Image 1 (cartoon, rainbow, N blue to C red):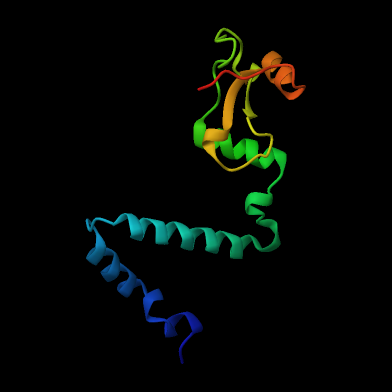
Image 2 (cartoon, helix red, strand yellow):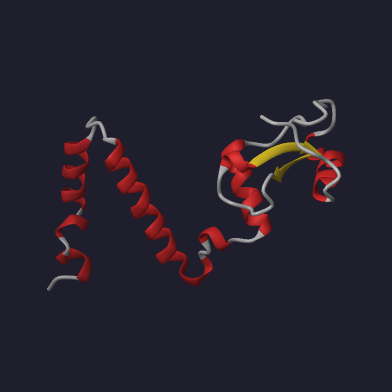
Length: 126
């Protein structure tokens, strides 16, 4: 009598170990890395079901994504102030469209960020 997991040969521990040892040290091509990334995104969407929103994520989720990709801001790119406490610097979205594009975000202090959001501040060209 077999359990459901035992019917799938790739799930057996001895087979998984053999596969793992066979691919160690084999370099991955950029195409392979992209395919793995796409498979991981699909898997994430399937695991979280309706909770996965992708580009439709909320304001806070996108700010957390930027912080994960670019790190915590530690100076203002407008006034060049770097003497404030770390919580007084934020990521501001340049286009106000909140795209998942790291080039669409800029470090600002709270004062400059508020002025920018109220259209009272013109950002310098990068």
